[in-house]
Amino acid sequence: MHSRSRCRNPEAGSDVANLTCRAEKVDGGWIINGQKTWCSNAHFARSILLIARTSNTGKKHEGITQFHIPADTPGLVIKGIDTLGGREVNDLYFTDCRVPDSAVVGEVGNGWNQLMAGLNTERLILAAMQLGVAERSFGDTLAFITERKQFGRPIGSFQALRHRMADLATEIECTRQLVYSVAQLADDNPTKLLPREASMAKLKATETSKRMTIDAMQMMGGYGYATEFDAERLMRGAIISTVYGGTNEIQRDNIGKTFGL
Ligand SMILES: Cc1cc2nc3c(=O)[nH]c(=O)nc-3n(C[C@H](O)[C@H](O)[C@H](O)COP(=O)(O)OP(=O)(O)OC[C@H]3O[C@@H](n4cnc5c(N)ncnc54)[C@H](O)[C@@H]3O)c2cc1C
Image (cartoon, rainbow, N blue to C red; front, side, top):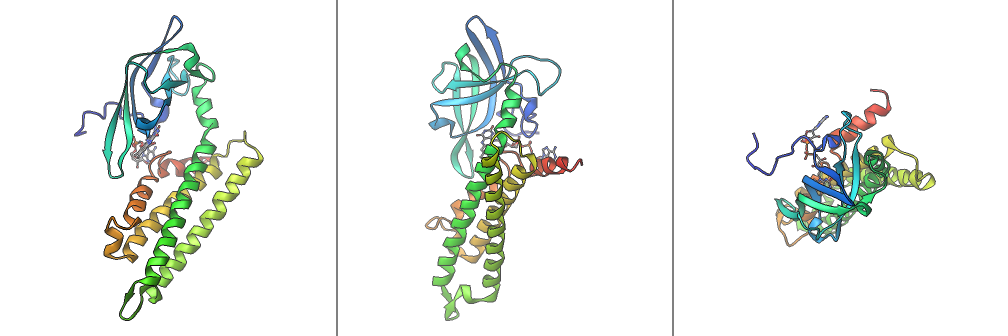
């Protein structure tokens, strides 16, 4: 089915706990073998946080441990993946990669719970980033449609564009209120898991930035497609934000589960 041999570990995508990258205990440390598909900016990193399977209890959420891996560890190969966004993400290959006991982050076997504890923050950061992308895209578009004239008047004065901008401004304001309120909840109680609210913030902000940046390109006409403006770059970044950090289908599942569905 896959045209690329690099997709060797397809089960560990949305089904994160199904990961197969293994760390085996040896005297004084661990030996890691396997692959981590998709790791943003690993080619710039000095160290990488890896979750690997350290025991097999038969339950996929157990026996997972987090490791801190220096990027220059022998046996670790970082290979770029070509994407629409350019060189931003990598595959990591571990071959008999030896790390000391001190590389363990937190507790051996507790990696899944540690991962869950960080999800509020991860989802909120992604939501805040995409809120910023949407706001930037709105501002750029507003400046463009105010300046650009057709039929003797600024294109922003046509109702088709004015109403579209009004809808987008409303969407962005709703998103801003949601993201800020969830951030406040997380600040008020940093250890509390917010599975519904954090997933809502990620879902809403990424869908808003995707809609905003795609609409921006339409409203800017051919100029939105040209690389001399940032519109196409913002759109390329926004359209993948509904995939990484847990796809938006998975965020909807998370929200649904909090209602007992
Ligand atoms: C640019 C980029 C950067 C990334 N950076 C990182 C990173 O730094 N660290 C990291 O760990 N990961 C990273 N990822 C991986 C990212 O988190 C995964 O791509 C994402 O979780 C989806 O996994 P997948 O690509 O294997 O898709 P799949 O899981 O195969 O999903 C494919 C489609 O099926 C849908 N689907 C799957 N399961 C279900 C279900 N149960 N219900 C409904 N729909 C479902 C998905 O929503 C999606 O639409 C990155 C990915 C990209 C593209």
